[in-house]
Length: 84
Image (cartoon, rainbow, N blue to C red; front, side, top):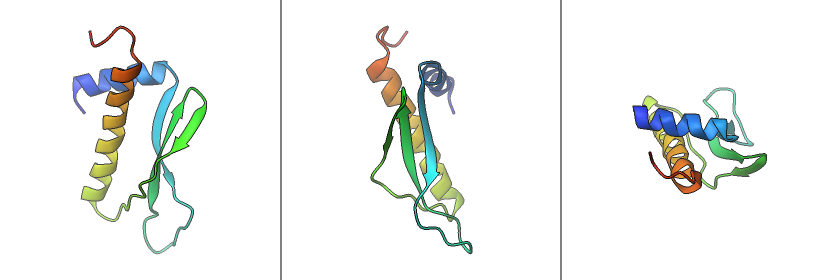
């Protein structure tokens, strides 16, 4: 995570914008559960359409990158002060 991404994430958390993976409905004990990404925007929750597998480290890194990208998006689109 870069300093800029950390700043964006911090701003989002301060403004009640939370982005996190949730376990998808079906789950088998013998393999890691698939996840969806959920955005909690000031109490309004929306679950993404993409179901992510997390069998490999690469899969987990893709999920983390998408979450950071979403924090960047919300910071840029919702921060009225722009990008100081």
